[in-house]
Every structure is written in C-alpha cells, then in structure tokens.
Image 1: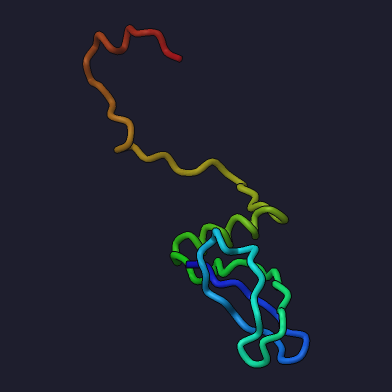
Image 2 (image 1 turned 180 degrees about the horizontal axis):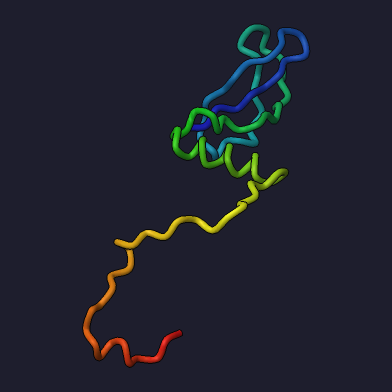
Length: 94
C-alpha cells in the first residue's frame, strides 16, 4: 500500500498508509486530532531495483551531455558466421 504524507499545522508532518482508493480522503493528526493537509513529495524511486536505478541515472546524465563516440565500435567476428560455400559468393550483396 502507498504511503501518503500529511502536515498538521500544529504538530508537523506524519505519514499515513492507506489504499489508493482512499488517497483523497482527509486525515487527522494522530497527536492533536486536527485536520491535516496532504503534502505531495517526490516518489521513492531510489528504493527500487539497482539495475533500474543505474539505467535511470545513465538516462538522466545523457539527457544533458550525451556521450560522443569518436570511432566505430569493434566488429565481433563470431556474431556473423561466414559461409565458405562458393554458391553464396555469387549472391547479390546489400
């Protein structure tokens, strides 16, 4: 269940865990019982999967200053098998 942050004008902030269907429902302060206002914060993305976190960080870095490649990457000979059949040599090349 999601956690929603609220702020009491007298006691300060507190969190409430409730279902999403009750996200807009008002909350009362657990200390004084005063009606509290919901505070919107950034989502807790850092608590997720480390691989996803690295991908998001790399995407954020490259948005402003993309990495520039100075040469063509090396060719992997094993990735594309070469046929030694003489009939294949007569086929049209792309």
